Image 1 (spheres, rainbow, N blue to C red):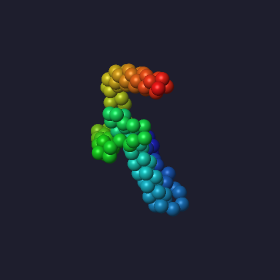
Image 2 (image 1 turned 30 degrees about the vertical axis):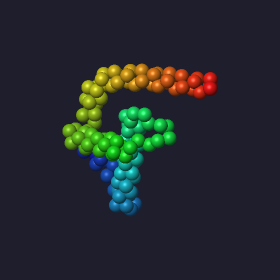
Image 3 (image 1 turned 90 degrees about the horizontal axis):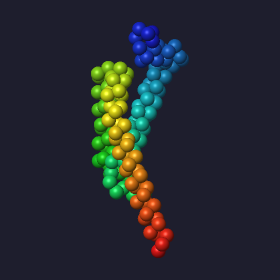
Image 4 (image 1 turned 135 degrees about the horizontal axis):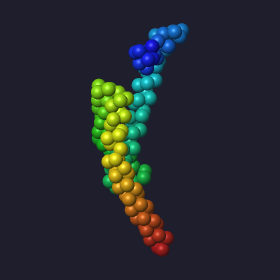
Amino acid sequence: ILAQQGQSAAIVAILKTLPMAKFMMIFLCVVCFVYLATTIDSCAYVLAGTTTKQLDEKEDPVRWNRILWAVLFCLLSIGLMLIGGLEAVKTISVLTGLPLVIIIFILMASVKKMLKEDCDRKAQKGKE
């Protein structure tokens, strides 16, 4: 089944062999939905916090920014499912890899700058 129809069909076939098969399928759908929702929420929270300027350590990013990132993740997921699943992800990974390396170097420089500013600020407080 896995080779001919794919992973989803294999999972359904396995679940049909279990007792209370319908309940198990509903349970699997609920678990997958909760997993997806929490993953998207945490990714949206981290990206909203990263893209917000002057965010205090005890502040949360603004709600509209989190919602924007969550919607973008949902659209990306739906788009990938529509255009071909894993093969599309592999192609996109290769195509976006090099620009992401450049962005990571920019982020590293930004972290270095922020750490230096924080160290200087703490040194000023220590002198007072």
